[in-house]
Length: 395
Image (tube, rainbow, N blue to C red; front, side):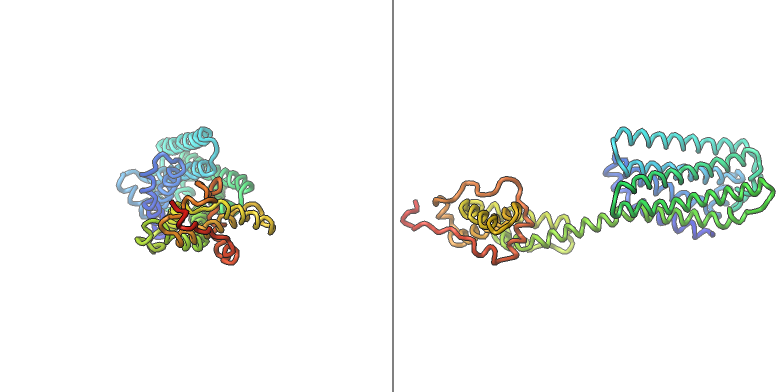
């Protein structure tokens, strides 16, 4: 793998992190968001500093031969810790327990990173190696231990991530389960990366030469693992967002018949006509629901309890369940109230017998059900309207 094979993923991670920074500033106390940003940052740093051109430049700037080795290994350890902390926070649970487990992983891998640096300082690596340091120094005291230690850290993270994801995947369904299974595939590649490195190192110990596994195969496995894991982390979030947006627009559309009836009645309706193309799905639905509630409020004095009770009884007698019968009754009452308001826009019959001060049903109305009933106009067309009192009786 050449420089671009490292720099392109690093740039992608940097772009994703930049996209997340505003959210992080607004919600710094969110542990899941912090874990996501830390993971993106560490992944980008690993790819950037593991690129052969960067390795050579870092060694030159520091003046220490092979200084990039403990740096990259420490970044890999930090990345492993971030992955474990992310999956712990993503799964959730009691906050104190989540924080305790996260701190343990962070503390453990922090010690791991310090040990890597100490072993490098104790060893002797005078010849710069940009791509094959693991096998070149596989038998060098202290450097050998440093290599084994970093590979052990990667292996522990890979096995633990697969274990945690598998346990969680057995308890969930849908996009989250698919995402967890994809993450497992990604970390299987990471574990294979460590296995390839170990095999090459062990071969050196035995006097053989399997350097190609470490130099050529392992980097490809690491790149595949990182990219597949990133897809696994992102897929549930993106698909859940798309699903939520689809459901919101579906609800918006389903509320159309009820909104069409009530929007002209709502105060100030002339200043808006549905939605504007730059509105979000949430804002459009909120505006439509607001118009509906404003219309219901304007119709409140015209609601007739007798109309509601009669429609409820008829719907129940026709075999409708309780929720559907309630929706039919509400729709009938709304239709009758609209007719009454059109016939008496000045409110001359507000005190007529048979009206109720609060003719609405108890509890929140299912606006979607009411709208569905209104879509079937014949069902509501038979709703009895309220007869106006003779003017001579109006006081």
